[in-house]
Length: 271
Length: 263
Image: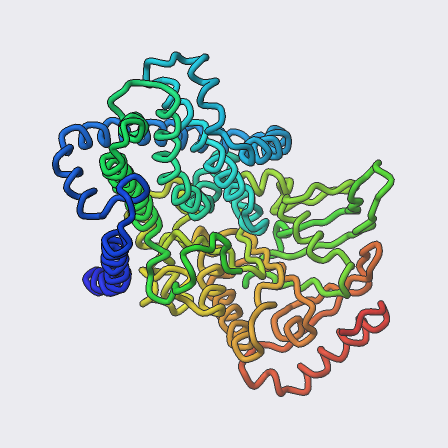
């Protein structure tokens, strides 16, 4: 079954690979044919050449930015899940906090980056990390809390008829019920954490990170290097997205069961 | 099915239930309910919608607390019985947990009682055999049909041999054929386990086929209108075509008509 799924997902990727390669071909051809200047849009081949030439710098930058993104992601997830458990357990708190969290989540949190620099220091990584944590926290909190509260009332009554206490209900019903909701949030915040880290780096922090490599090279008109750095950032984002999908699959084996064919995107349960 | 004549299974004594008491939006759901259910009996609560039959079931199960009167179950308060884990419950919504395999769903109440893994395994195997789903222990609930899911739900409710089985329209979502099959299965299981059953339904034929006694409730507020004894002996598929069965159904239907709720 595993093998079949692997083959299936492989064939599903096929068209995307073909379209992607064709896209790069068109890009290369258009830049050459119309003589588009390096300044506006470098050729994929020259970006690839810079990627190889500047690899030690880019690899280091990608690694460091990735570390900020991942650490911020983990802290943001942990905080979001813990607060969701807490507010679900104490309902009053939930009713007060959730609308507030939704409102804050609708504001562009990355816009806070310069302010976080003032709070947490402009030279260290703490302010960058804080931006990532703030961006990750809200979607995780909101979705997880929703999954923990949207439980069929019969399931709660059933647990109560077994004399189960609130924490047992949390462990046995609310947490597993929230997993699909959490997984949806994870799909969003995993790539978002990289975006947040890079935007934060535009405003401050150490100078050897992806954000700074992009701004400084663009500043010196070395656009092909800037593009190479963007490619590295994309790779980091994709890797984190893939990791999110993997977590989703591993944590919810029942969703893969044969016959359980409904969409993985829909957190709502069948009744 | 032995009653023995000692302690009654359920005594409902002058129970009233008012929702939203003291808010101005009060709804009187039940009023002055007196009811005694013998150990080993199969009793059905029937009545038009709004008669409070599900509310009465929840009061017996201590999922709600009455605003007047009291409920005792095997000589203990309903609260003591619930915290003492005497109840098995089955709802219309099978309420199986997607993330647990069928076997693990049946074992859930046993886990909550700290049974050892060996004992749990043995019991869930027994229960799967009882509801004739031996081959499906390692499936996830979503892989099962609605009728099979409801059988798992019954197996889960019976796994710890509850003294009282409370069922709230458990077959309400099933098609007619599956429903009749499940009724037969339930009576077979009831005969094998000897547990006491309180069963809520809005189906006249279901009430007539399953019960020793049918409690007909009148609506707004819910009161006991009449109690109908049903004596059809051992039920078989042929019982459904027996004149006595039709007679019982007619009695129930007439009682429902007189409370304004023939469905």
